[in-house]
Amino acid sequence: MRLHIIGLGPIGTLVAHHIRLSLPREHKITLIHKSNRLASRERLNGGVIRIENNGIVTSSTGYDSEVFDEEELIKRGPKSKRELLGHTLNIPEKPRDPVEPLQQIESLIITTKAQSTLPIITRLLPRLSADSTIVLLQNGLGVYERLIQHVFRNPETRPQFILASNTHGAWLKNYSQVVHTGIGDIEFGIIPDPRNRDFEASLKDEGVPARDRRLEINDITRPNDLYFHRYRSLRLTVAALSAAEALNSKWRPIHEVQVAMRRKLAVNAVINPLTALMGCRNGEIFTQGASWLIARTICIEASTAYARELQSSTHSMLKSFGDVDNQGQVPIGRLPPALQAGALETECVRLAKSTRGNISSMLTDVRQGRQTEIEYINGYLLRLGTAYKLPMPGNLMLLNLVKMRSSIPLDQIL
Image 1 (tube, helix red, strand yellow):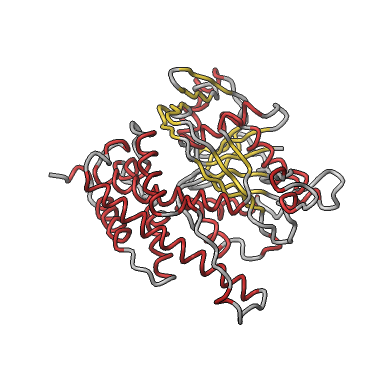
Image 2: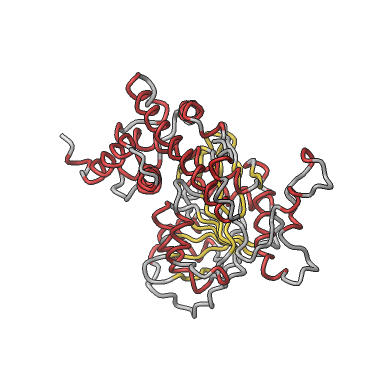
């Protein structure tokens, strides 16, 4: 199997490192760099990824690489350090040797900014198929829905999707060098199969006590399966992610992952815009009462929207079963405790403290004049509010302030 990873910031690099350490060498990992300049830096460094945690540095090697730039994806074969020193400082626009045909992508892990996903997938579309697997490991929500709406409209030709939520804290010391500042976990789940294969069948096995039921990888596929080729990459991707034990990476039922992603979204909707606006580190935003009031407002708005979303999905489910007459008599699904406003507020404070020294990705984007992920964070909550006719003044204010902050160059600040 070959895994492709695109989005080599702190989290993408961290994930690549731990998957490489956990997988046998016959399984290949290709890092997709966003420019020739960054790819050459990685080669000059010997193709080594270094991760620092509590002063201890571990390293990994054995990566292939590609370059994703404005013109084309160019496959790069391994080169010696001597070759690199002689040639990479002036990489030609086109390779001197014939370019190898680009491989079909079996498994693609995306850790880029949310707003970059649609153009990336559009560019890679000729290399993807219904047999491929795409992992979305990003901030924000709404990316999968946009891909389904704009790119993969036909369920029969759609790749399998894995949604993942990350709570690790890390920052990029240098390209391919990451400082792992906060140990968290990665929870991931598989989007239900358009062809109706039940990847969570073992959780419904009444022959096993409920407390002993576990997700089983053979529910995805097994070697004697008639459609093994179609689900092979999904099975291997789940196995690869699960093998990265140092990341506390766990396969969960998709509804649990969706709860985790919504919890993280609410936390990001507080920490990211506040740090971007105040120009401070994560740990500095809760030093006085005003920030607590803002956090409480955002968490209440998010929790209210999640509750209305759950209520709406329950009603839709009842309609699909044709039980229209009894809708008012059926208890609506209870909002998970993790998505209650108080729990969201507590999680905001906990994460700000555990990553107190970190600079948020949104603050980094503002400082570097890049587009932020605000539309996929507070913007997603605003769209939920619009859909269910809920006022979201706190989220609207933060979204507009971040847009204003992003439009004013830092060198114009008086």
